[in-house]
Length: 122
Image 1 (cartoon, helix red, strand yellow):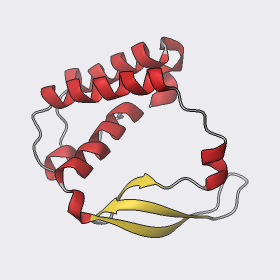
Image 2 (tube, rainbow, N blue to C red):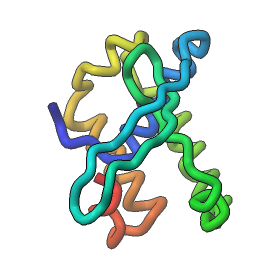
Image 3 (cartoon, rainbow, N blue to C red):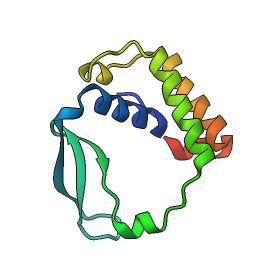
């Protein structure tokens, strides 16, 4: 498995939702304890048994400040990547498209979030 950027993972999760919106379900799961924290229960959106998004607790949502400019840049990037992506099914999203396709996500992340933050997006 390749080391995908967070931006690429986000793109692929979004494509999964677009490809099969009727199969989305909610899953309750508990993250195992570790690194000085106890077990963490949570709710997740899933397609089949594949978690695609964790639902944020109200406190975390309240502490989050949206950046609409960067959000718009991410939206535009998702559209461009969709045009370049040859994969057409959820099963295809597990396949590696190629280094150039994946490197494009890292480049976009550098432009959108700044080169110094690119490591945060892996």
